[in-house]
Image (cartoon, rainbow, N blue to C red):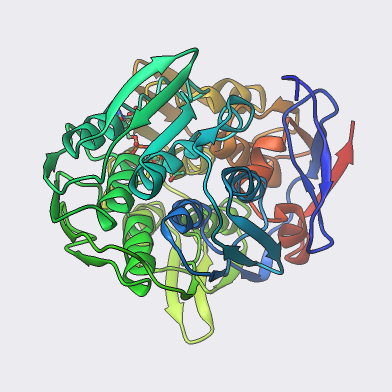
Amino acid sequence: MLQGTFDKEQRSSGQTIISCSGEDMDKLVIEGGVPLTGGIDISGSKNAALPILFACILLSKPFTVTNVPNLRDIHTTIKLLNMLGCTCTYSEHCVQVEPGDLLPEAPYDLVRTMRASVLCLGPLLARIGRARVALPGGCAIGARPVDQHLKGLELMGASFQLEEGYIIGRCRRLKGTHITFDMPTVGGTENLLMAASLAEGETVLKNAAREPEIVDLANFLRTCGAKIEGHGTSVIHIQGVTSLSDGQYAVMPDRIEAGTFMVAAGITGGELLLHNCPFQELESVVRKLNSMGMEINETPEGVLARCAVPLRGTDVKTQPYPGFPTDMQAQIMALMCLADGASVVEESIFENRFMHVLELMRMGAQIKVSGHTAMVRGVQKLTGAPVMASDLRASASLVLAGLAAQGVTEVRRIYHLDRGYEHIEHKLTAVGARIQRVQE
Ligand code: UD1
């Protein structure tokens, strides 16, 4: 498909999903100023479901993955898995995977729309000893290299060459070894964890990322018979096995979606009850929102988020888990725009993740960026404006700002949002927001 085109696909669930980037783009029209109240169900985690689906390449028996969110990235992954030779079907948040004869090729047309496609590299090498995967290239939030994925797989015995924009990998059976990452990388840890599950002998991953989604992937692999210890810490031990078995696994709930709705409660002065919310995994986010004046408590019905006092500014530095997640940086910045006093945001994970700033400023926010740091001065009000989403979490930040702003905000290019938030406008409408998807 040409860059700049766009299509809508009718899914097996009968729901329509926006499926590609392009000119014919939907926008969200938001009339701000309504305090949101009510309950919201948190969907399955996108960032946990993606590696789990790629891990299905490792399986030689059928498997069912449940609580899979109905998102564009998930459908891209299913499309890619089908091209690679697995038979995957999606219905009602459930993916059935039937293993088949695998092919090694992940084409650029799919990889460029979803960087996580590179997660098929480790499983393909482990399963068939061959992979031809398009090099993902840069994206809106930075260069995002995959050198750590390749270095780890090389240490396990794979060899790589780059041909016509494709990483071509080959190996005999991968061999367990000790791998120390230069930095905690989520995707790198996941790729190596999957590859090591079918490798010969023991692999030890050091300076591994500790994100809850990695723990979920490890738990999925353990359900299939993989021997993994230490997931959730920075040293993971994997004892390779020769095959993985069938079964069923439910994906964890999405902590970033939940965190975004917590901010929605705070920014609109409302009260939201989040069902199926991964509270523990949001500790750093909850701590920051508390310091801004929000009350967030676990109740038997769910997590209750509200704000009864004027918001106060705070300082945030993004860090690998258990630090404050980069995927919540843009959303908390929207909240800071309307908090009393100054706030400072330091982005330490990605080099180019302040693209929401100029758009928030078009709505009246006062923000100054210097390198990796943004200084936010709270204002009394934001005003609705047409704004442009540049990436997934930046889009969420603009929606949040629009929910609080006076007047009408139009958030354009929301195909980014459709990659990571399931039916966001339906969920927000159900708690009182005046928000509509409009086709341009
Ligand atoms: C994942 C998440 C993304 C989140 C990010 C950080 C998924 C599908 N995506 O992305 O939403 O924002 O974690 O929490 O789960 N790096 C290298 N070389 C590598 C790999 C990474 O230099 O080989 C650098 C990256 O450029 C970045 C940092 O390491 O600066 C962290 O990246 P990483 O944790 O790998 O992020 P992703 O897995 O791409």
